[in-house]
Image (cartoon, rainbow, N blue to C red; front, side, top):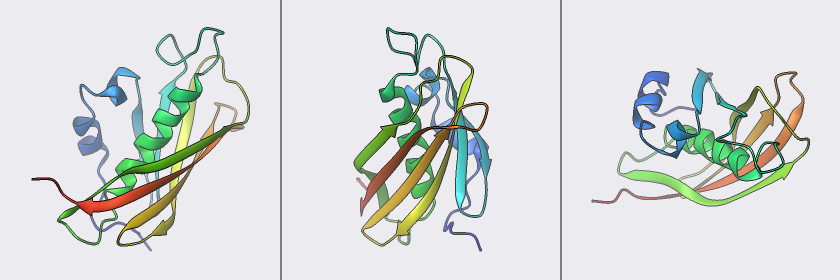
Length: 142
């Protein structure tokens, strides 16, 4: 059974992300399931740190992007918006090239908070980072 209150759409997500950190980092939305959103990010000059491995901040940006987009498709009140309240990330193994893939899945969807787990994996399917994102659900501005 799908968790969405607003059906997520890959094209709408990509359009909303134009000219933002998301597009500048090369993040792409790949797949939407009944309870998850998947995306990927290149490991290149935009996303690595000076030692040539994926920057932890880049991993967090991918995690928050996927979790945030998903969270806003699960709102119970159309006059609210989900915004990041807290995020943590454990970096498990380095990535030096190719792509890193992320999957965001809800752990809790409430009327005032949501908690999402985002797993990042390398091209071989090995875990590179695990992140937990807490979203605050608040009144939509304006």
